[in-house]
Length: 223
Image (cartoon, rainbow, N blue to C red):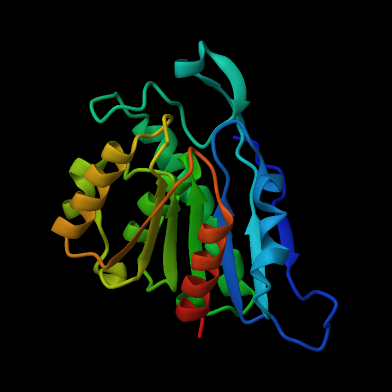
């Protein structure tokens, strides 16, 4: 897979005397790119935090008639019974792990790294963070679902058993339904994860109320 260099943003970049001491790796959804959440970073206005916005590689997506687009893995459907591209999911997991390692190499502690994602990116965020061997600061799963959920109990790493999870969904989402997301929520709760659940009056998108709640979650994780 060919990965473009991710965007890197610091919301208070003009204050050069402030040292970056935390990182948020934020994955976009299917068919988008790292610029998708670029406008959100200034709105969060959290000092000393580096936001890393990676770009998914281009690939043919089965559900979209083989159309080539940015994707974190191939997609066959969006129902709970759909076939899953586990190899593609693992490839993205390894890539996100490499981004985490880069932050560790820069001197950021693992507990000050948050993995976030929207839609397909949120699925990778959940999959990767819950299997990561070092304690992370938190996980943000936005308008998404838990992939390969049948293997969570056996593959999850105890290091992140208590890592806080922010999970948010639109009640009018017709791409990934609220019911499908709640099945994932139930799986996480059945496996004793601490999930902060949020519903918003929106479709498959992000709203200002959600951004405000994300701000609060990140401030709490990175306090």
